[in-house]
Length: 306
Ligand code: ATP
Image (tube, rainbow, N blue to C red; front, side, top):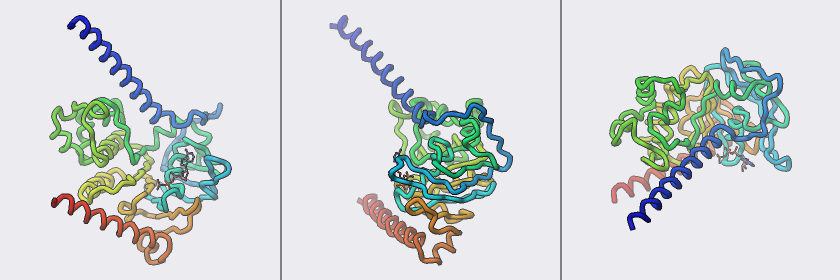
């Protein structure tokens, strides 16, 4: 029996290793090769970032020609400032961040970074200068330290820990068995959405890109986690050109400018107080979000009290 069991056990192990390798490769492709159709021009130059200003000039975009998503979008994120894009679900907010990463290209109009059309620069240089805190972070099946160091491979252990501390995830890591060497992902410790997002923030702190995109989590986080993430983000955003794709509205009160996108067009723009006072689309989105948040918090409290 043992003679039969051992080869089977070995084959099981090999199967698991192969399956895991496939999952790892799939994740790499998710992260690195979103759209292989986008190719560098033969004379593409590296992007040179001095200040880090972003400019959209009359950008039109459709995934499918029959259904335009962005219809003449123009805006500017001045160097070092924070601009937030808000709007109803499906308005095209995340599409804007995909275009900045050049996972897709506009059908017309231009996207410039420090005056250089991103269609003319190499994708590698573009992605080196633009950091992204996505709403759903892919964690590799490896240690927590590896997942943070992904932001900058030559970072020392001290730098990894410092980034984790700034991202408010260090004390959590120290509490889990194995600490920074704990395995995460499919095979290891499962992290909550808020914890994963803080790992992504730590990665971004290590990468220290001049331009940053934050794709805010769609799902509601409890108010404590949200505050923790908020204070972690404030450190990252400081003095960096930042575009916030806001699916919720709580992180954008202090943005230098808020763009309200509706059906592919910017319908309102201004600061939080101005837009609230204007009593338009933003005002309605804000009030609805507050009602949803209040209802969810009440539900959570009731569940916690049971
Ligand atoms: P949400 O707040 O719900 O995340 P959003 O404003 O970020 O929405 P986008 O993700 O930019 O919306 O999507 C805009 C529209 O484009 C949606 O209707 C979506 O279905 C469509 N879309 C998004 N990605 C693709 C794709 N890869 N192919 C085809 N259509 C897509």
